[in-house]
Length: 416
Length: 196
Image (tube, each protein chain N blue to C red):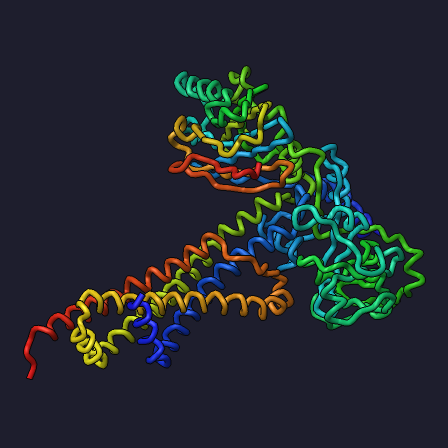
C-alpha cells in the first residue's frame, strides 16, 4: 500500500513527462481499438445491409463486384440485364419473388434507383427489418419518387417537393423537362437506401424516352406525352431474388450462371461478402499490425522516459535505501509506476476511443454510409487492453531492474 | 434495289447467328472443388463438384481397363455421402438418396444427355471426345436430420479419400441466410457456428 502511494506520488511529482507518456499510450491504444472497432463495425454494417434475399442476379462479372454495385451502390455495373432474360428467369419455378433494379442516374450526388413497388416489401435489412416511411408513402404516380432519410435531411426535402434527376452520375445534363414529386421519405436504416432516390422502372424509361445515343434527341417528348408511350423496361441493372426454399437456391443459381441466351450470374449475398472479407482481410491485418506497432512504440517511449529519469532519481533512490528500503522495494516501485502509467494510458485510450467514435460517427455515416455501432468493448478488444497493460508492466521492469542493480551498487561501492 | 435485296439477304443470313448459342465454358481448376450445402427445416442437401484430376488423377477418356476401374471405384465411393461429409451424431442425419456422376465439361450447355450416369459409364467415350478435355465428378445427397440445430461443424473426410484435392469452395444457404467459406486440406472442417 505504501508502495502504491509512493509510486503515485512519484508520478504526480513528474506530472508533465508522465502526462505526455500516458497521453502517447492513450492515443496509440485508441488508434488500435479504433481500427478494431471500424473493422468489426464495417463488417456488421455490410452484413446488415441485406437480408432475406437469396440471390442477386446481374451481368456476368465478379461476385463481389455485383454485390457492391447492386446493393451498396459502390462502383458501376459492367453490363445490363435485358428485360427479356429477367422475365424468363423470374418465371422459373424456383423463384418465389424477384425485384428488378435499375441504376445509372443521379440526383445531386445521390443515386437514383428504378424498381418496382415490390422493393418496399422485399428489401430487408438488419436481420429482416422492412423499409418504412417516416412521411408519405410509396411512389404511386409515374413521376413520384421516394427518398431516403439522408437525401431528405441533407437536401432539406419535404413531401410534394419537385426534384430533377440528372442523367448519369455527373450532373452535366438534367432531365429537367420531367421533374419528380417527392411522395415519401423513408425512415433512417443505416444502409445505402438512406442515400437513394427510389422511382419506378417505368419512370426511368420515361425520362429517357426522348434520349437517343446518349443525348437528347431533336424531338422532345413532354411529360404529358410520355404517359401515352409504352414504358415497359428494356433493361435492368440487377435483380434481387427470393426462392421458395433454400434447397432451390443452388439449382436456380446454376440455371442463371449457365443461362445460354445471355451471360448472367447470380450470387448469394453472404457468400459474396465472405469473398470480400477475404480480400479486405489482408489490409485489415496490416492496419491492425501497424496500430499494434504504434502501441509498442508508445510503450518503448515510456521505458525510455523511465530510463532517462533514473539518473535524476539516483538521489531519491539513495534516500529510499538510507531510510531502509530494500533494493527489491525499488524494483517493485519502478515496475508499479510503469504499470500505473500503462493502465492510465489504456483507460484514457478507451475514453478517447468512445469520444472519437461519438464525434466521428455522423461524419463516417455521411461520407461512407458506414454506421459504426457504439458498443461495449468486445472480448478481443478487452484482451488487447490487457495486453497493453501487461506489455507496459513488462517493459517497465527493464529500467526497474537497472535501478535495482544501481541501488545495490550505490550502497556498496565507495564513490569519490 | 439490288442493294436493298442484298442487305435484306444479309440480315436474314445474320439472324440465325445472332440468336445462336454463345460459346461459354465453366472455370475448371485442378485441386479446387465446390461444395454447395442447403438446409431447409429437417432436410439437408449437398452437391459436390470436383475436377476429375482431384478424384482419379486423370481427365482423359477412360479407355484402359485400369482407368475404367478407377472411375467406377470413384463413383462408387462418391455415391456414399459419408465419404464426403461427416455430420455430428447429435444431429441425427440419415441419407435418403445419394448419387454420383462423371460429367464431361464441354462448351455445350450441360444437359442430362451430357452427363454420364453411374450405371451407364460404359458409354463415356463419345461424350468425352466432344469435351474440352476436362471432366468433373458431381456427387449429390439428401439427408433428413432429426435435430439439425445440433449441427455445429461438418468434417470433410473427402480430403482423406482423395489426396489430389486441395480445397473446397463452400456455399451454404438455409433459412438463416447464406454464407461462404473455403475449406483447405490442412484443416478439413467447416465450422457452422449456428449459421446453417
